Image (cartoon, rainbow, N blue to C red):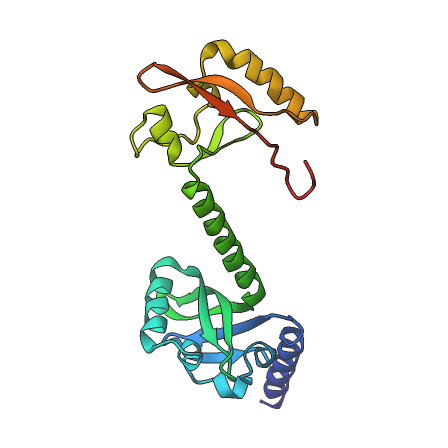
Length: 238
């Protein structure tokens, strides 16, 4: 018995020593009811709660969720065995925090007994993601509100974005999606070679002014329009 107790204490010490050095990641084990049975010490640095504040409790409820959140996770674990989900929660001091829970269920003869998993602080990453989404939304709103027809094509001439004005100018219904279509589909075929040559010059670094072409409407009629194009480069300047 003494040897068994010693071995258990040694294993616990080794586990705590390892899991205490995981930075923004904490290891945990929950029982079949979603109650924390073990959580690594570094959870204190992540949430402000020490293991003794958490063990024996519903961790999600402790950080601001209601009991139904854990109940839902347990049901999902029984069906899917592994789940990965992000939550916006609160630290002990009330500060908001984003945590990603990656959890794998454990079974004994087909009976759900609990789950092991990791809790990762993704707050910084999430804030960046949210700001990018805001920027993209603003960018899209500006393009959509422009009175000019704005179109973005990739290096093959395939359309990846087209503002709503394109539907009016080219005579297409609102539900028509320009994306995935070649830009040349909407240009007088006689001008295709000339446009291609200008594109090659632009990619070569040559500045091209305003160009005039004939557009091709859905009904086959043509119309004169001006094109003022710019190269869009990535963060590496390519």
